[in-house]
Length: 319
Ligand code: SER
Image 1 (cartoon, rainbow, N blue to C red):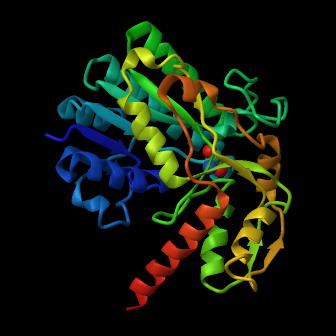
Image 2 (cartoon, protein in one colour; image 1 turned 180 degrees about the vertical axis):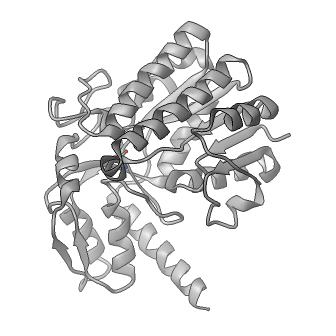
Protein backbone atom coordinates (compact mmCIF):
# COMPACT_ATOMS: atom_id res chain seq x y z
CA UNK A 1 0.00 0.00 0.00
CA UNK A 2 1.40 3.42 -0.96
CA UNK A 3 2.20 5.77 1.89
CA UNK A 4 1.54 9.04 0.12
CA UNK A 5 -1.39 10.40 -1.88
CA UNK A 6 -1.29 13.51 -4.05
CA UNK A 7 -4.76 14.91 -4.85
CA UNK A 8 -4.70 17.27 -7.83
CA UNK A 9 -1.73 15.47 -9.38
CA UNK A 10 -2.43 16.78 -12.89
CA UNK A 11 -1.92 20.42 -11.94
CA UNK A 12 1.11 22.69 -12.26
CA UNK A 13 2.36 21.99 -8.73
CA UNK A 14 0.93 18.45 -8.59
CA UNK A 15 3.05 17.13 -11.45
CA UNK A 16 6.26 18.56 -10.02
CA UNK A 17 5.54 17.46 -6.48
CA UNK A 18 4.71 13.89 -7.56
CA UNK A 19 7.99 13.62 -9.50
CA UNK A 20 9.93 14.82 -6.43
CA UNK A 21 8.06 12.48 -4.08
CA UNK A 22 8.69 9.55 -6.43
CA UNK A 23 12.42 10.33 -6.44
CA UNK A 24 12.51 10.68 -2.69
CA UNK A 25 10.30 7.78 -1.60
CA UNK A 26 9.88 5.54 -4.67
CA UNK A 27 7.20 5.28 -7.36
CA UNK A 28 5.29 2.57 -5.45
CA UNK A 29 5.07 4.70 -2.34
CA UNK A 30 3.05 7.39 -4.12
CA UNK A 31 -0.57 7.23 -5.31
CA UNK A 32 -1.79 10.04 -7.53
CA UNK A 33 -5.32 11.27 -8.09
CA UNK A 34 -7.11 13.87 -10.13
CA UNK A 35 -10.35 14.42 -12.01
CA UNK A 36 -8.26 14.45 -15.25
CA UNK A 37 -5.50 12.08 -16.24
CA UNK A 38 -2.10 13.76 -15.65
CA UNK A 39 -0.35 14.54 -18.92
CA UNK A 40 3.01 13.27 -17.72
CA UNK A 41 4.51 9.81 -18.17
CA UNK A 42 6.63 10.14 -15.05
CA UNK A 43 3.64 10.91 -12.86
CA UNK A 44 1.66 8.03 -14.37
CA UNK A 45 4.26 5.49 -13.21
CA UNK A 46 2.48 5.74 -9.86
CA UNK A 47 -0.96 4.23 -9.28
CA UNK A 48 -3.60 6.63 -10.63
CA UNK A 49 -6.96 7.02 -8.88
CA UNK A 50 -9.62 8.84 -10.82
CA UNK A 51 -11.16 11.05 -8.17
CA UNK A 52 -13.50 14.03 -7.93
CA UNK A 53 -12.22 15.78 -4.81
CA UNK A 54 -15.67 17.30 -4.12
CA UNK A 55 -17.32 13.86 -3.98
CA UNK A 56 -17.51 13.07 -0.28
CA UNK A 57 -18.25 9.35 -0.72
CA UNK A 58 -15.40 8.59 -3.11
CA UNK A 59 -13.01 10.72 -1.09
CA UNK A 60 -13.78 8.99 2.19
CA UNK A 61 -13.62 5.54 0.55
CA UNK A 62 -10.20 6.25 -0.96
CA UNK A 63 -8.86 7.84 2.21
CA UNK A 64 -10.24 5.21 4.57
CA UNK A 65 -8.86 2.36 2.46
CA UNK A 66 -5.57 4.13 1.76
CA UNK A 67 -4.58 4.93 5.36
CA UNK A 68 -1.94 7.27 3.96
CA UNK A 69 0.91 8.59 6.01
CA UNK A 70 0.77 11.86 4.07
CA UNK A 71 -1.84 13.42 1.81
CA UNK A 72 -0.93 16.44 -0.33
CA UNK A 73 -4.23 18.01 -1.23
CA UNK A 74 -3.59 20.40 -4.12
CA UNK A 75 -6.86 20.35 -6.07
CA UNK A 76 -8.16 23.91 -6.42
CA UNK A 77 -9.48 26.49 -8.85
CA UNK A 78 -6.99 29.37 -9.07
CA UNK A 79 -7.54 33.11 -8.95
CA UNK A 80 -8.35 34.04 -12.56
CA UNK A 81 -10.55 31.01 -13.35
CA UNK A 82 -12.20 31.33 -9.96
CA UNK A 83 -13.46 34.80 -10.80
CA UNK A 84 -15.29 33.36 -13.80
CA UNK A 85 -16.90 30.61 -11.70
CA UNK A 86 -17.11 31.94 -8.13
CA UNK A 87 -19.48 29.36 -6.66
CA UNK A 88 -17.78 26.43 -8.38
CA UNK A 89 -14.41 27.68 -7.12
CA UNK A 90 -15.70 27.96 -3.57
CA UNK A 91 -17.29 24.48 -3.77
CA UNK A 92 -14.18 22.81 -5.11
CA UNK A 93 -11.71 24.62 -2.87
CA UNK A 94 -13.66 24.28 0.39
CA UNK A 95 -15.51 20.98 0.09
CA UNK A 96 -12.43 19.06 -0.97
CA UNK A 97 -10.40 20.49 1.92
CA UNK A 98 -13.11 19.64 4.44
CA UNK A 99 -13.30 16.05 3.11
CA UNK A 100 -9.55 15.65 3.65
CA UNK A 101 -9.61 17.26 7.11
CA UNK A 102 -12.52 15.01 8.13
CA UNK A 103 -10.61 11.94 6.99
CA UNK A 104 -7.60 13.08 9.02
CA UNK A 105 -9.86 13.64 12.02
CA UNK A 106 -11.04 10.02 11.65
CA UNK A 107 -7.41 8.99 11.97
CA UNK A 108 -7.10 7.78 8.35
CA UNK A 109 -4.27 10.22 7.50
CA UNK A 110 -1.25 11.04 9.68
CA UNK A 111 -0.19 14.26 8.02
CA UNK A 112 -1.87 16.64 5.56
CA UNK A 113 -0.37 19.29 3.29
CA UNK A 114 -2.64 21.97 1.87
CA UNK A 115 -1.45 25.01 -0.09
CA UNK A 116 -2.52 28.54 0.64
CA UNK A 117 -1.46 31.56 -1.40
CA UNK A 118 -0.46 35.21 -1.49
CA UNK A 119 -4.09 35.67 -2.62
CA UNK A 120 -5.11 35.80 1.06
CA UNK A 121 -3.66 39.32 1.10
CA UNK A 122 -5.38 42.32 -0.44
CA UNK A 123 -5.59 46.09 -0.89
CA UNK A 124 -5.51 46.83 2.85
CA UNK A 125 -2.46 44.61 3.40
CA UNK A 126 0.92 46.33 3.53
CA UNK A 127 2.51 46.01 0.04
CA UNK A 128 6.15 45.20 0.74
CA UNK A 129 7.80 42.58 2.95
CA UNK A 130 4.41 41.41 4.18
CA UNK A 131 4.86 39.88 7.66
CA UNK A 132 3.45 36.53 8.77
CA UNK A 133 0.65 38.08 10.79
CA UNK A 134 -0.30 40.80 8.27
CA UNK A 135 -3.92 41.71 7.67
CA UNK A 136 -5.65 39.22 5.37
CA UNK A 137 -7.89 41.01 2.90
CA UNK A 138 -8.70 38.71 -0.03
CA UNK A 139 -10.69 40.15 -2.93
CA UNK A 140 -10.95 37.03 -5.13
CA UNK A 141 -13.02 33.92 -4.46
CA UNK A 142 -9.78 31.96 -4.62
CA UNK A 143 -8.28 34.21 -1.93
CA UNK A 144 -11.40 34.01 0.22
CA UNK A 145 -11.32 30.21 -0.01
CA UNK A 146 -7.64 30.18 0.94
CA UNK A 147 -8.23 32.47 3.92
CA UNK A 148 -11.15 30.35 5.14
CA UNK A 149 -9.14 27.18 4.46
CA UNK A 150 -6.26 28.43 6.59
CA UNK A 151 -8.59 28.89 9.54
CA UNK A 152 -10.21 25.51 8.96
CA UNK A 153 -6.75 23.94 9.05
CA UNK A 154 -5.95 25.60 12.35
CA UNK A 155 -9.38 24.65 13.69
CA UNK A 156 -8.90 20.96 12.90
CA UNK A 157 -5.43 21.08 14.40
CA UNK A 158 -6.55 22.73 17.63
CA UNK A 159 -9.84 20.86 18.09
CA UNK A 160 -8.92 17.43 16.82
CA UNK A 161 -5.13 17.33 16.74
CA UNK A 162 -5.01 17.01 12.95
CA UNK A 163 -1.43 17.48 11.74
CA UNK A 164 -2.08 19.78 8.79
CA UNK A 165 0.62 22.01 7.39
CA UNK A 166 0.45 24.80 4.87
CA UNK A 167 2.43 27.32 2.85
CA UNK A 168 1.28 30.59 1.28
CA UNK A 169 2.90 30.12 -2.12
CA UNK A 170 3.91 33.06 -4.26
CA UNK A 171 3.52 32.71 -8.05
CA UNK A 172 5.22 29.45 -9.08
CA UNK A 173 7.40 29.17 -12.17
CA UNK A 174 8.51 25.86 -13.60
CA UNK A 175 9.16 24.18 -16.95
CA UNK A 176 7.86 20.64 -16.37
CA UNK A 177 4.17 21.53 -16.12
CA UNK A 178 1.79 24.18 -17.38
CA UNK A 179 0.05 26.63 -15.06
CA UNK A 180 -3.73 26.79 -15.13
CA UNK A 181 -5.91 29.80 -14.51
CA UNK A 182 -3.71 31.91 -12.25
CA UNK A 183 -2.77 35.57 -12.27
CA UNK A 184 0.94 34.75 -12.10
CA UNK A 185 0.81 32.44 -15.16
CA UNK A 186 2.45 35.12 -17.33
CA UNK A 187 5.79 34.34 -15.72
CA UNK A 188 5.72 30.83 -17.21
CA UNK A 189 4.16 31.79 -20.56
CA UNK A 190 6.80 34.46 -21.17
CA UNK A 191 9.59 31.85 -21.17
CA UNK A 192 7.61 29.57 -23.50
CA UNK A 193 7.10 32.41 -25.96
CA UNK A 194 10.75 33.50 -25.79
CA UNK A 195 11.90 29.97 -26.51
CA UNK A 196 9.50 29.63 -29.45
CA UNK A 197 10.99 32.80 -30.95
CA UNK A 198 7.69 34.64 -30.57
CA UNK A 199 6.86 38.01 -29.05
CA UNK A 200 4.83 37.78 -25.85
CA UNK A 201 1.72 39.79 -25.02
CA UNK A 202 1.61 40.19 -21.27
CA UNK A 203 -1.73 40.46 -19.48
CA UNK A 204 -0.20 42.42 -16.59
CA UNK A 205 1.35 45.87 -16.60
CA UNK A 206 5.10 46.12 -17.22
CA UNK A 207 5.75 47.45 -13.71
CA UNK A 208 3.49 45.09 -11.72
CA UNK A 209 5.76 43.53 -9.09
CA UNK A 210 4.60 40.27 -7.51
CA UNK A 211 6.15 37.70 -5.17
CA UNK A 212 7.43 34.73 -7.19
CA UNK A 213 9.28 31.47 -6.66
CA UNK A 214 11.07 28.94 -8.84
CA UNK A 215 9.27 25.60 -8.76
CA UNK A 216 12.20 23.58 -7.40
CA UNK A 217 12.34 25.87 -4.38
CA UNK A 218 8.58 25.51 -3.85
CA UNK A 219 8.76 21.71 -4.03
CA UNK A 220 11.77 21.62 -1.70
CA UNK A 221 9.96 23.89 0.79
CA UNK A 222 6.94 21.58 0.73
CA UNK A 223 8.98 18.42 1.34
CA UNK A 224 11.00 20.14 4.07
CA UNK A 225 7.89 21.39 5.86
CA UNK A 226 6.34 17.91 5.74
CA UNK A 227 9.45 16.31 7.29
CA UNK A 228 9.70 18.65 10.30
CA UNK A 229 8.59 17.20 13.68
CA UNK A 230 5.07 18.40 14.51
CA UNK A 231 6.09 20.30 17.63
CA UNK A 232 8.34 22.61 15.58
CA UNK A 233 5.39 23.92 13.60
CA UNK A 234 4.07 27.00 15.31
CA UNK A 235 2.00 28.39 12.46
CA UNK A 236 -1.05 26.21 11.88
CA UNK A 237 -2.81 28.57 9.51
CA UNK A 238 -0.18 28.87 6.74
CA UNK A 239 3.43 29.97 6.47
CA UNK A 240 4.52 33.01 4.44
CA UNK A 241 7.18 31.95 1.96
CA UNK A 242 9.38 34.40 0.10
CA UNK A 243 11.94 34.03 -2.65
CA UNK A 244 11.95 36.86 -5.19
CA UNK A 245 9.86 39.77 -6.36
CA UNK A 246 9.90 40.99 -9.94
CA UNK A 247 7.89 42.78 -12.61
CA UNK A 248 7.12 41.57 -16.15
CA UNK A 249 9.62 44.06 -17.58
CA UNK A 250 12.33 42.68 -15.28
CA UNK A 251 11.70 39.12 -16.51
CA UNK A 252 11.70 40.42 -20.08
CA UNK A 253 15.09 42.08 -19.50
CA UNK A 254 16.54 38.97 -17.95
CA UNK A 255 15.37 36.94 -20.98
CA UNK A 256 16.83 39.56 -23.34
CA UNK A 257 20.25 38.91 -21.80
CA UNK A 258 20.02 35.53 -23.57
CA UNK A 259 17.74 36.43 -26.47
CA UNK A 260 18.30 40.11 -27.34
CA UNK A 261 15.53 40.19 -29.96
CA UNK A 262 12.81 39.00 -27.61
CA UNK A 263 9.89 41.44 -27.47
CA UNK A 264 7.08 41.89 -24.99
CA UNK A 265 3.89 43.89 -25.50
CA UNK A 266 1.62 44.85 -22.66
CA UNK A 267 -2.15 44.46 -22.77
CA UNK A 268 -3.37 44.34 -19.17
CA UNK A 269 -6.73 42.58 -18.75
CA UNK A 270 -8.95 41.71 -15.76
CA UNK A 271 -6.03 39.87 -14.14
CA UNK A 272 -4.24 43.20 -13.65
CA UNK A 273 -6.88 44.10 -11.05
CA UNK A 274 -6.17 40.88 -9.15
CA UNK A 275 -2.40 41.38 -9.31
CA UNK A 276 -2.75 44.95 -8.07
CA UNK A 277 -4.55 43.78 -4.96
CA UNK A 278 -1.68 41.45 -4.01
CA UNK A 279 1.57 42.34 -2.22
CA UNK A 280 4.85 42.91 -4.02
CA UNK A 281 7.04 40.95 -1.65
CA UNK A 282 6.75 38.61 1.33
CA UNK A 283 8.67 38.34 4.56
CA UNK A 284 9.19 34.79 5.79
CA UNK A 285 11.11 34.84 9.08
CA UNK A 286 8.63 32.44 10.73
CA UNK A 287 9.35 29.75 8.11
CA UNK A 288 13.08 30.41 8.47
CA UNK A 289 12.96 30.14 12.26
CA UNK A 290 10.58 27.17 12.59
CA UNK A 291 11.85 24.86 9.85
CA UNK A 292 14.91 26.47 8.32
CA UNK A 293 13.41 27.75 5.06
CA UNK A 294 15.83 29.40 2.66
CA UNK A 295 15.22 30.11 -1.06
CA UNK A 296 18.00 29.16 -3.46
CA UNK A 297 17.03 30.32 -6.93
CA UNK A 298 16.75 33.98 -7.95
CA UNK A 299 15.76 35.59 -11.27
CA UNK A 300 19.00 35.37 -13.31
CA UNK A 301 19.53 31.69 -12.50
CA UNK A 302 15.86 30.91 -13.03
CA UNK A 303 15.94 32.49 -16.49
CA UNK A 304 19.00 30.48 -17.53
CA UNK A 305 17.45 27.25 -16.22
CA UNK A 306 14.01 27.87 -17.72
CA UNK A 307 15.32 28.74 -21.19
CA UNK A 308 17.68 25.77 -21.29
CA UNK A 309 15.08 23.31 -20.04
CA UNK A 310 12.35 24.48 -22.44
CA UNK A 311 14.76 24.36 -25.36
CA UNK A 312 15.81 20.83 -24.47
CA UNK A 313 12.17 19.76 -24.23
CA UNK A 314 11.38 21.33 -27.63
CA UNK A 315 14.34 19.54 -29.22
CA UNK A 316 13.35 16.17 -27.73
CA UNK A 317 9.81 16.67 -29.02
CA UNK A 318 11.08 17.39 -32.55
CA UNK A 319 13.53 14.46 -32.77
N1 SER B 1 -0.49 31.52 -8.65
C1 SER B 1 -1.76 31.76 -8.03
C2 SER B 1 -2.67 32.50 -8.91
O1 SER B 1 -2.17 33.28 -9.68
C3 SER B 1 -1.57 32.53 -6.75
O2 SER B 1 -1.52 31.65 -5.70
O3 SER B 1 -3.84 32.35 -8.81
